[in-house]
Length: 498
Image 1 (cartoon, one colour):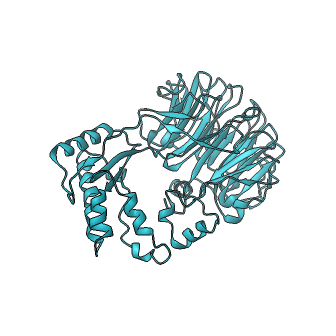
Image 2: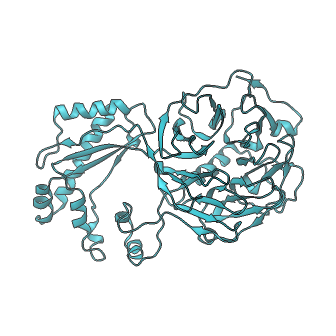
Image 3: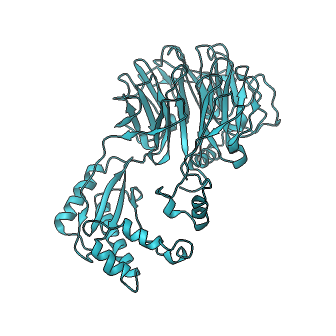
């Protein structure tokens, strides 16, 4: 993952591609009627009457009549606002680019910026979840997790950091390793895309991100535990002989069977890691004048297995080499004399071979729980995950599309997922199965929809997306109508189709 986080780049790229924002002529746009429509990324409905939606160019739209009419709030910023969360009808937060945190005390009509440590670092904040009017959790790039318990007057840093025993430590630059050894903070290079919390008195929270990161908290975001993803497919390591590269026919067939078992599970990537026996690591590594022949052998072993998996039609971009030989190890020895020895020790196995395992790292966009037990996650490639144990474990659920599902939300007896190119799917069994909306219950949509939200009582539902479009349901998500968008401003209606 590059240091410029994928999600921010994707959002900016999509805006440029669609060309769907009309440029404001005034920076400090006063509250009032909406005259120019912006892409909307997030919506929050604290009750059946009030809601706030935020998005591009600092846009914040608010309603106090259940979404019948919408008005423009004054945020005082041109920055992208990625997320909004209202603690109640009047008080809430929005977050966005470069650590921006905004607070409203009047239902979204006006906003005040709150200083925080991520603003100084320039880290984007992708999501915020309000637990009550004083307590909230925000997440973002570089493993950002920050928390307030005083209404945003101060923010505590709970971000993911790297220690000497962290898997990312070995790949840090020497200067960053030195910072870690000196006890300085080095943030993990992972983007956290969404956080959700049930409203007080519950203290349950969940967060998700890239690399399949899923965590849950039972103390309002103060501490976190990692969740598990069930349904993994594994195989025993491929066995080879001393200094051997070629895979035996029976082992090759076993690899092919493994590849065929996951070829249609596009959300699953595969880690391939060549390992050596202790004899190989000693004779060809520690005792050898030249360690590069050992490196060449290990890399060739991994590529042999990759070639077999590619023959089963597993996409090459799903195959990830792990434990690659450190060809530039000499550059590290002055600052870290034990660098090579640690690599040889780490890649030593009971026998020569290649480890092959599934990496549970789907790219995840949104997590939502309707109560403390039942939750859903949506992600890239049509990924849906569901949990019925409070987020301690999740299982994959198939839908009939591989398009991006940007958001998901549920009420009792109904779940709705929305995504790119007008994708909408619904479930009536807590996300165990998904199907299209019945004909005549949802307008024809060909643009992206970025977020879906239900008010706590379950009756009001809202979907927001491209060019200021807002869709509303008043029957727990069974029928939807367009209440804001280009055609609404023009006094036209949009077709309702299949």
